[in-house]
Image (cartoon, rainbow, N blue to C red; front, top):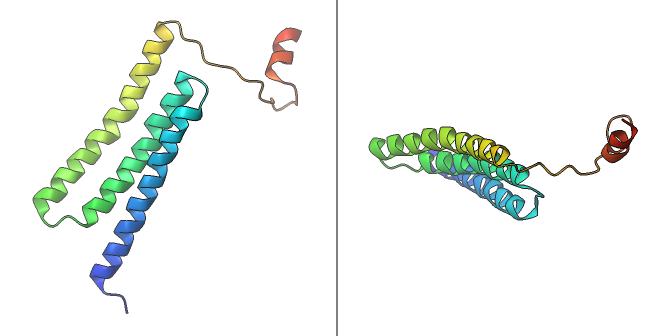
Length: 120
């Protein structure tokens, strides 16, 4: 039978590794995505989830209540500030005249975006 400490350690490491996976995925997205708006989405959404998973994993290892409270406060701070910052940056980019990159993705009716625009 698995002891309680061992089960907490296993759950903690699973959360930390999952959080690192999402953080690395968001970092790769910063380099691979085409424009500033897509990059902000990758950084703001995926990294917020990654940081949250890492902090929850660390919360399971917290040796005292005061440290657990500090980790929870950091988690709440990141949860609210990261998406808010991405929203403010997107508004500033739009206000500055940056246009989103439109690719030739297929639309539901099978036409590309460019061919739809040329018909209108």
